[in-house]
Length: 489
Image (tube, rainbow, N blue to C red; front, side, top):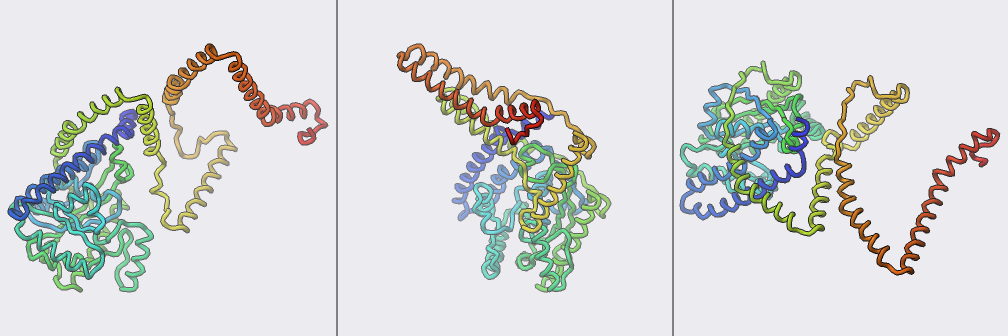
């Protein structure tokens, strides 16, 4: 199993999956661009086509999560609400605590068959992301500049444009992070100062939400968006660290989602009432997430666990891309390496080795580097712990008893094989060349060569005598003649 996990996290495999995503994504973006000629004639047909084209990209993320890394998501939700979300336009409000909190949401959407209708309300720079951002443009996501005067017009205009002639029996869901950015403790503390000034409730696990965009969306919904879904995502401690790199490298993340449906009719329509409703919602979300922090689960927090069967659509889509793109590319690469020059093969090998070393680097996401004072305290605390650990070693001549079990590490032959490779590629050809040179060179050339070797030998010996051997001799004489000190010698 360990070898299999190492294989999944190797650079070659990660690069292969990334290559398939890149090529397939560009193909889909091109098809989406071509489909735009349909827009003036039939908006409904254009939207139906792009819903399924987008599925060819989004499903690769759920494949990586569900099938590649064996990550899973447990859903806590009212079963009646689960039926409703499949048959209505919705706005989804989610906490933004993790790098990949959106992936569990997509997993649930994929399993219940609504992922093709996923859209976002995000910052303007997201539309510039290759493949993903371009796909969001073609599927009519809404992008804002975070300048209220401009965003007010953009939100109203784009939402009305989407609601105009949207295909019947097709539904969309807008993902909205009211916090506006991913959670950090530094951002929370800054936002809580604003909350205190406004007399708003303090949040432990969220940033103070921004209410203007949500209020405007609600006012522009025209009673066609009928439900608001409040999603609170938590990742269990038993799983891998919730990052995109973890799931790409095949490490399993275990998530839970707590979902509540709020009918649009229960939310105040006026600006002040809607703002206060959002603040109250986030206070409730904070309590829900605090329950998860204390219990490592949403179980017992008022909603039943809902089992959703896994389907194979994302797996089949990924296998299709592997057959269409991956297998032909592998054959081409093998043919290229087989027929290319030795230099090209060597460069390819070096790139692979360096890339493998890079993705194995120590992660820094647990270090509080965003705040100088906190980072300084962290480093000071780290070296206090290191000092205590090494003091234990000095006293006991081992690290046993420090709370970390001894892990047997099996010796592998990677360094031996690398050294043999260099001997074969550099050493043996050099020896052959050296033998030819000695055999075919003139007497004068041989003498010059012998003098160079002799000079190198003398210089090396002088360096050794001045450092290691001379120091050893001093200590040896000091033992033979106790009345002499090392410094006197």
